[in-house]
Each structure stands twice: as C-alpha cells, then as structure tokens.
Image (cartoon, rainbow over all chains, first blue to last red):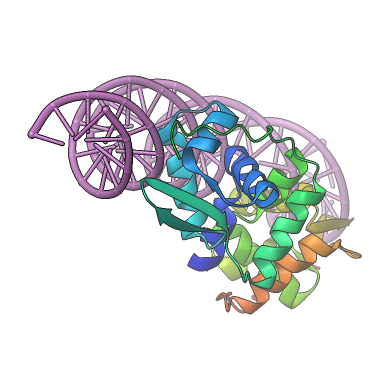
Length: 103
Length: 103
DNA sequence: TTTATATATCAATATATCTTGATATATTAT
DNA sequence: ATAATATATCAAGATATATTGATATATAAA
C-alpha cells in the first residue's frame, strides 16, 4: 500500500504533473531550466523534483554544479501508464527556457 | 488536468484503495456490507464511495432502500491499469460481512 | 580565498483533505 | 401514520500537504 500511495501521491499535484510532463517532453533538464521555464522559485521546484524522484518517476545525474533530471528508464508498466495518461490528457506546459548562467 | 487529478485523487487515500479493492474482489455490495466489513461509520463510507464513483471507478444501482456499488464496466485502460496495480500490490481487505438487517 | 551560481532543506504559514457526529431524505414494515 | 432501516450530506475539528523565504552546502570562476 505504501509504495502504491507514494507513487499516486507524487502525481496528485498539478505542479508535479506539469513538471513531469515537461521533463518527459524535453528530455534531460537541470533545475534552473525548470525554474526559468515555469517562473517558480527554486525551493518549490527542488521539493517537487525530490518527490517525483523518490516515487520512481525521475532520476537525477549530477555533473559539476548542476543536477540533471530525466525520466527514469527503464520504467515499470504502471508508471508508464501514468505517463501515457498525462501525455494524452493534453496538459499545458511552458516552452523550455534555459536558465543557467554558465554551463 | 482536472479529470486526471480527479482520477488520481480518488485513489490517493488508503481507505478508498481498500474499499475499491474490496468491491473489485467481492462484486456488487451495498453500503451496509462495507460498513459492517470495515467497521467504519456510515458517513465515512458513503463519502468515499461518492468520490470513487465521481472519479469513474464505481457505479451505483439503487434497488429498494439499498444502494449497490460495483466496479464500472466497461472501464477505460487507465483506470483499469490502476485497478490492476491495486490487485498486484497485495493490499489487505476484510472478509465480506453482510450488514443489512432485512433484504 | 573570495565570489557567484546551483541545488537542497528547514520552519512558518496557507491550503486542502479526512473523520466524526448530527441531521436529512427515502423506502419499507407494522 | 409511525417506526425502523439505508443512505447522503453538512459543519466542525483534526490531519496532511503545498508554498514561501531563509539558510546551508557544493562547485567553479576570478
């Protein structure tokens, strides 16, 4: 039950669904790209990324001072079906707007 | 987004997951059967059934003074995948304990 | 070593959701 | 018509979750 509710709880929030859809669409992005694209404060983004990662939807790859997030692969059938439903639900996401000052 | 979150929100609660699994396992049951099997007060059961029904997981059939709830059929692929995950998640449910005084 | 950038986490507040007990409505039996 | 049973809904309090602003840590550049 705990794992199920953790997975479901992660996508029970509009902000996280948008972020997940954004990463699924754009591939690997860093936190400041999301921050810049969504115009949200960094602590809010960071918190939601952690929840999505802990729920098994995202993985993170740290390189230099950046944390690159992407959809975990391979991903199990259930999480895949959630991602599919998000894609089919025609959810609006902003255009990718790179936010890093140096890279 | 609203429909997606409504569907997800319905199964983002341990009580509702158990009730849904219970109905999926036992077939058509009335509210007092659930009340009696789960030892929960009636208003709580009734509220959760409404949420599951409004989210497209359950249907209700009123006969006499009883309201019989069952899993909606046919059910779409996404809700089906959620039901499947609940079945696979080995969630504990009580035995069916009929609660109606007359029928 | 100092400064700027990137990210994570904490504490406080705001917001949403759940549980309970009371009440309302409907159906059936007496 | 009255009483019993079944179900739904509301208001109040309890609990959980989200947002913000502040702070901490780490990397890299100057």
